[in-house]
Image (cartoon, rainbow, N blue to C red; front, side, top):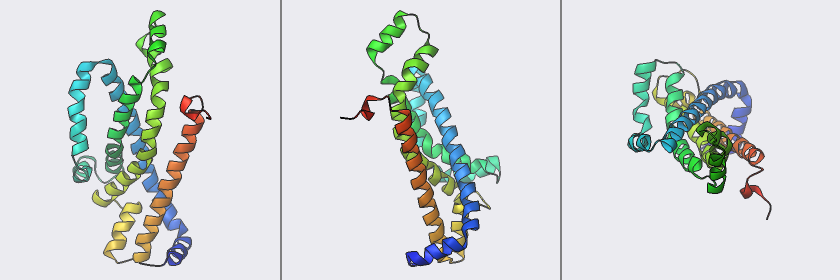
Amino acid sequence: LPAPSRVAVHLVGNLGFYFDNARTTLAEAGLGFVIALAVAMAVATTMVHWPLAERATWPVIVLIQSTPVVVLAPVFMIWLGFGPWPKVLVAALFTFVPFVSNAVTGLRSIDPDAHRVLRSVNASRWQVFWKLRLPSALPALFAAARFCVSLALVGAVVGELYTGSTRGLGYQTRIAQTRSLVDQIWGCIFTLAAIGVIATLVTIAIEYRVLRWHPSRANP
């Protein structure tokens, strides 16, 4: 276990190396995060509006949650090759279930009185979604996002470990392990931890700015 000062010296001396690999991992995690959010919103919206779709979809979601994503990584590599997409798909699967679960809960957490008012003026489902359901779901979505930013990062690293990558912090950690480069292993760990903390803080800052109108943000 190297001293933290030794790891810090190693990081400062190799900033370009860690920056380039962190950029690759962050791009894979970010794209997986966005894809998972978009697909989860589409699935959750369908489930909320059509009970039959909900009954048909929940077993699939449970199956995805119960299957270790790491065992699917080699399959994605066979299907999609050695590019970034297997890593992106692994990151998306890591974050999909929390997003879709919170999205369903949030889309249903609407004010019944507001819903009756919109129905009384013949608002369409699309208008109810944009004016009522989506704003009501934002707190639940941000609650999921706070965890999913780190999960997406974990997914990208797992993808790099098991899908034949040639770049990224996960790949460099594996190379450092095979060559017993202890400083590089801890340098990757410190870099990933820093990215996770910064991404979480940015998500929280966006949440507080977007949800200033929400009662939970009101001063006591």
